[in-house]
Length: 249
Length: 249
Image (cartoon, rainbow over all chains, first blue to last red; front, side, top):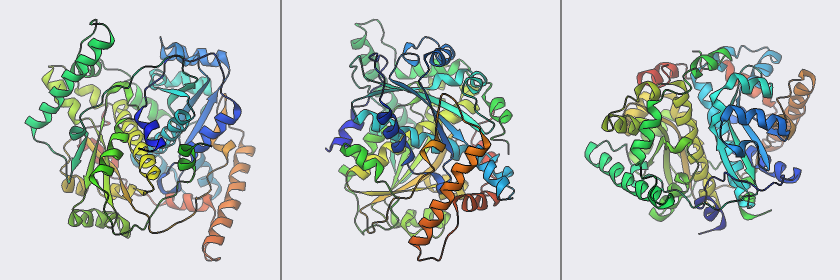
């Protein structure tokens, strides 16, 4: 096993950081690694916003709620799907690009581009001994995030990433069984096997929580996730995305 | 600079592979690395399909068109956004999860999850000396891909990834300027600077193509990308996604 694979496999989210900032050099390396990721047809449909200002971090933390590490970390990145620059070049090149930019396809492309860049950033940061935590909670209120970060139309602040020097050392969390995530030659839909795999995993996760919480918690993955999905959260998203003129056609 | 960052920074897509298969061990390591990526609220909303069958690869290659490396590689992965298993657990736990699953928010979450997993796979493969190329061309016809790979409702075959032993050694491709992709404290919208950065980059890309093609090609990034966006490709996507019951509300 090489160093990179070791880094990747030992990933766990860090939710408590030392009171120490990343250096500008570290920030630059992380962003350059993000930029080195593949991008759909060379479109480069993402941007990254770095937040150092403590007051601004607090405002973002208020949107996320009860996650102290959004305000306290070594650096806070926001990864954005970005098709704004493409409207600009379309105008300048006098080409009608708007219908394309407003399509569901390009909406997907911009999300994929931003996520690929972000995961490179995550791995790069972790390889330097830093810890990271993705912050999807920004999507609790993208109108507010848009206002705080002055993002224009056709830019979606997709998620944050808190990065810093770890002040905790949690273990890794077991994932769904390999054979459930990975299918060969085609998607395996046999209900019996499919559900059996989830059963097995449910037992594993329940035991994992029980051990980690000294018996206080022993819910299964199925129960945790279906409970989360039952609450209809962020249902404003469709309208927000439409308002910033993406995913329209 | 550590090994991981070196691996990430020297990424370039490989489009010609030796006639040599990945070992099952290599495939497993790549998938396990994919699984180690962060996942939104632990939802694990993705699946990976591996294709070895040459005939099946040919059928996928026909959808992509003129990309020989889709049929000829060491292994072909398809990364899928997957909310199918979540409908299953919802049913089993007797919880009403469908409205949530059909939301634009969860559509985004599943795409992000799949992309984070994929980029871990890419970096892991490259760290082993393998080459990779993302294949967005599968989205030319997802009805067909769905049929070939038997993916159920609520599963989107987002993109492929050809992986293998490189049989070429291309250079890296310059990205948009650091200061154009990376903003501090907020999105910088000053039009003059913004466009100037793109101008600079256009010159750089034009020179890059000129050198690489012995003068045959010297188009700018703006011209290349706006030309691509002018062609309204994959406009069926909105309907397809709706048909498989995602991004509906």
